[in-house]
Length: 473
Ligand code: 5AD
Ligand code: SF4
Image (cartoon, rainbow, N blue to C red; front, side, top):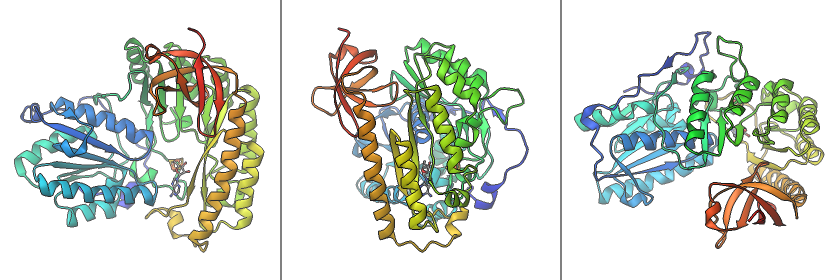
């Protein structure tokens, strides 16, 4: 048993990350364990987790389990959790209750708890003390060891908890079963060293560490060969890519090299305003297959709050960067993240956030009420704003954000845009996909277009989506 520990999770040394290429092994005793059995994965949280679940799916299939969409039919249930805010946490605890109930009917169901919540000291201890029926608890650093934990579970028939609070290595060679045949997530780096004061990620995901460029390029080349149309380069703070490598190679270099693979579409998330260089902007604007869409979290429009958040930029610096992006790429869409109700946020601070939204008119903003995370510096800051007031701020902010989302979308009416058609939409009989600028479009078209990038004429626009018809028949 190995439980997480917050003070170890905080440690950052100057040690180089180790690349491990042979650490994923499926012992022969579990190679066949899943034959005629089913697994179901519940995924909470960000794209990083979604991609981890694609790894876990492939690992389960290496043990011959078959995926099932209906959780009630599963022999193994994996809960891949998120720790970023309290509500994600509550959803997971609610789901554990449901699984417990299922187990009362079928006691042989295996439950695996993983992801960022497992990295939290309090949670893993709670699972150890009060959720003995959860069979395997593993953290974000050791997904690849799942077959070993399955082997131990079979042998010992008791709860297996292994969560490491380490800076982390780079594990290559974990298999992946991608959810889509057209769009792929590609990790370019792991972890985060920014330590924004509200954020749990640097503690749950370890230090910022970059994969080698050749490993990333090889992965993208394989995807091109398999007919993929889009890759999203993933990292908590992708602009810092390469800073920890011994070679002189940065995010701009990586984007340029990924562009040369000729994958039709390249996206990347998430950018931090701090490391967004002019060199990167040049590459993005010059390469046609790098999509004109940037997610650039601002978090707050108040310099006082930005400082308390340890974001390392001012509102003015953010605005300068934003304007530069628009200057180089006039059609680029820009989205953001905003937190309201950070400890000590006054109505004046909040008004400054509204002012920035009014000035920059984001294409989209993901908005959140601040949620205290145990162990982060902000959780010890004095917070005397009531929840009611915070909800009121959120609703005012959302109104404004939605207004600009619609206004931006209106510019698309009657325009012809490129859409990668991904599959059926939940809107009757239509298909869905995204423009290069990441606008969701419900398209009336034939099924044959699924998996292709097609020209679509936008016929109607709403706040969250648009409607369109294919024009190049
Ligand atoms: N409370 C609320 N929102 C948070 N985020 C990160 N941590 C917290 C927190 N403790 C938001 C930030 C980040 C996004 C992924 O989640 O806006 O950019
Ligand atoms: Fe969290 Fe800040 Fe790192 Fe983003 S940059 S993951 S908000 S600490």
